[in-house]
Image 1 (cartoon, rainbow, N blue to C red):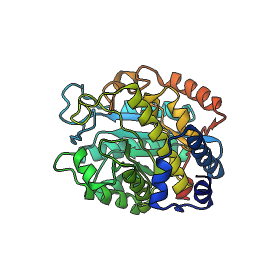
Image 2 (cartoon, rainbow, N blue to C red):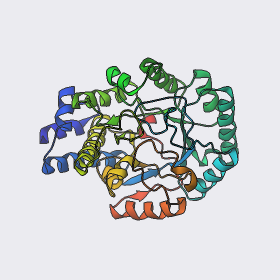
Image 3 (cartoon, helix red, strand yellow):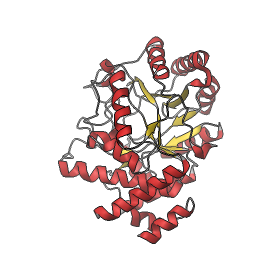
Image 4 (spheres, rainbow, N blue to C red):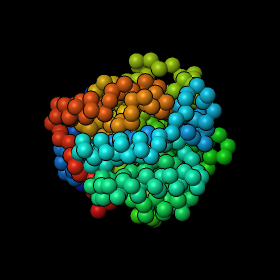
Length: 358
């Protein structure tokens, strides 16, 4: 164990597939402590004890996709669909900028249409007009044609998060109905990288029939696509979905998912070294201190929800999503306190770009 961690710290990509599995399989409290400490030391080496903030704007829950795991899948008739106006998005962006977040994430259901393309382009252009390079912009808007990605890049977006969900094509097929192409999603990742975006991707952790070997391959996949940032979280069943309706969410299940999520953060840090890694809200959904534990396991980015409270209940990709009734000001105060409590500081008024992208 100690020799394996020493090897991982020497340089990136220095672990074999079997060694990645070995680290992911750690179960003792003592060994997990060593794993998290080693991963945290790498974060300190490349980033310091600093946390980047991305203010999350969930601009629409209208989605053409019908993924079996997702609460906003097109067949879910139990949610009220919404779409923010340009003015609502810009008002939220104003708060994000004034609060010192430094960056925002514009996230929504997957839509492909000229109207949608032009709307997002208009929003991006206005953000750049108002705040220039003083506000970083990440998009998470799914699969698009190369021309659309290019248009949004030129309008001002410089990061893009497109999760692969699983790098195992067979698992991917089980997560999606016919018409969802694993090959197209991978192609989109390569296209985004080619166009000069800082590339983000990620997976769900602890899926049914997913093995530790699959997760090890996921980590290697991040390297293969040359990802600059990783956004991944434990799978939490949503009971209004085909995949999640029959999975009992017990305290034991939640603890298992949390620990596996934390180990994935740590092992990903040990393999990739200098990428940005998010401590996601899914960790917080599993434990009140889950987000802080993610930071201590090697993550360095948090994405607090800045969306107006009235819309948040309509954007639950998974069950028990936290902070649905906490306004953006309350979120900021809680963030500062929680980050300070673990000896970290917020990177205010900084873009927080990935060291890997430089």
